Image (cartoon, rainbow, N blue to C red):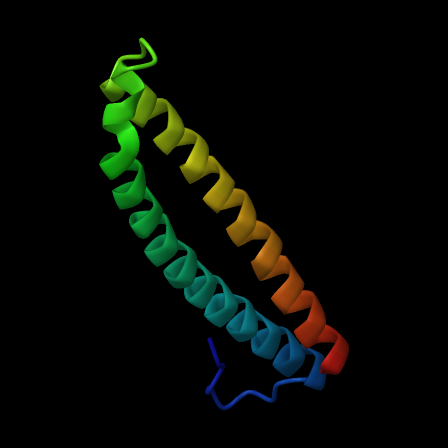
Length: 93
């Protein structure tokens, strides 16, 4: 966070604090957006999972496996998007 003590703060320190704040905001916003999408996707998966029993798959196992894969994909997307936002913000700063 911002250093509001009486000691002088260098421009480079202000820049670091500014970038940390951008990183924090980018990460929180990205997680929020992707989490909402993930919940919607999981609801859609749940609605269609019953068809798996026709294909001789246990619907609960299929739901768990696909849910894990979707979650891991979401985590990777969050990382990529957050890095992209921070990198682009750094170029403009």
